[in-house]
Image (cartoon, rainbow, N blue to C red; front, side, top):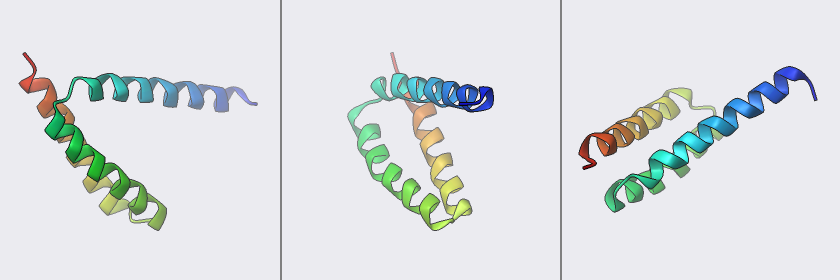
Length: 72
């Protein structure tokens, strides 16, 4: 395995860990919304619809930021 591949895997692992950390802080409504959006994102990615995928990613970001703002 090359150094670039290892670095990429480390970055993906860190991003996944960060995503999971934020996911745990969300409320039940936000989690349900994400559970609907994530399969749609995967389907759009597989279909090669990058504009649609970017739209879903923006919705996910909004939900995650909303969760940060509403935590007490």
